[in-house]
Image 1: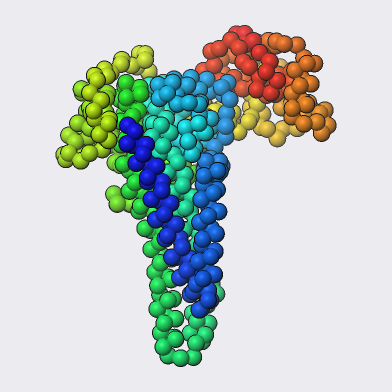
Image 2 (image 1 turned 180 degrees about the vertical axis):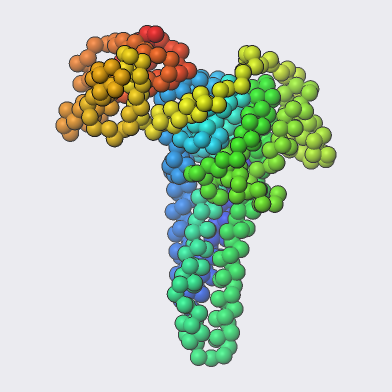
Length: 481
């Protein structure tokens, strides 16, 4: 699939040049319209600077910006061990050089995306709603799909395109709002006394307004059109990585059943996700402006892969479902004729989850991502403590015991450092405390506890390990049931 990587690198250059040119033309006409006749050069210079700055930002910090805009938070292994295990499995299957960072978005809408400028510096973000709805095979299909975007170098293209589209939209919005609120048309009409000058000014004004309206639309259409094809390719790669197309097909079917919009998503970031996150807003859109291929079509293609899970099998299924032999897989992928058989499901078909338990687990996961502490009393009552809680203990209303709050211990430990650097604090904690520490679980739900160094750890219901390694001090913490 080397052609695919090369094509995606070429797409990045194309999107960089085309959208940059669009930005420069828009800047010239907007500058000329606002301050004739020399304003055009000023607008061009501003657009050029914006293009250079935003391109640099896209390359060096685009992934961080997109993750922050999506309200994604990086999590540790103990928050959701199954997610980390699946990402590690798919990283090995895809032969990626480094483990992607893992983020969770505290939102009930099921979705996921990948970002990063190269495989060595990438990230995968999933929503709490996705984790609460999918079984292991379905989650593996989604992670394999996102891992395929990293493997195929799609993420670099999406990062560049998303930031540049945002720049074009920003300049257009600023100009149109300035025109609306400043009453500039009167100033333009009086700026030149000659009739010819007034006509030329009117033409420039109309051209600037038309460009300000059309430039964002053209940029979005280009962005969306190129985004749809890469979804098919990622589905094909995911089927090959997991050797179980039904897992991704079932996940897409499950995700499509919800009508929830992702609160943190926007028109600029929508193409990053595995499924359009703006479902309610996107229903009236035509196929031309859709950010994703029809989800029913993607499911049908995956379930039509009867001859194995290689790329040739996906191409045959694609042609059969679409009713036309349009090439979707690069030539090198079609030359791989080795039979790759499908595997069986990883376990028995999961029973339909209890709706109340699913809602409760979703809420607990979202609280864990938002750094709540889960404290259990000896009598069995559990408390969910917000991160801004200030009291060192909680009084149990059932048995009257005073329960220590881990977050308060962490705050006290941080205050005791009194200006020391993080490195000094780590070194001091490591040498002052014993090498090992034991924590005994009080139940099978969410629990929180503090390491002697002060770091807070979360144990999810799916945690089944016996050891947790503290990220702050490196101490091995033994977990007992």
